[in-house]
Length: 83
Image: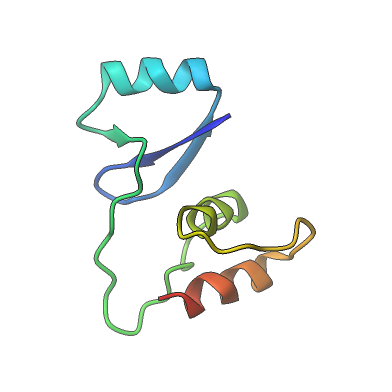
């Protein structure tokens, strides 16, 4: 599995590695293999509107460890604290 990131929004997309290569070749202007910093409005939480797998991908990209059985609220708190 490979995580790609939408260039404009920074949202994570997890796909098979073979598919990731194809997506990057066909749409380099839309997706990147590196998370890009996305401007965050003052007071906005990084986890707002993200799904669990997107929060996990963001935590992993930031090098933040988390338990495998962590609940969404716990993951969101970790991500928001890293803001």
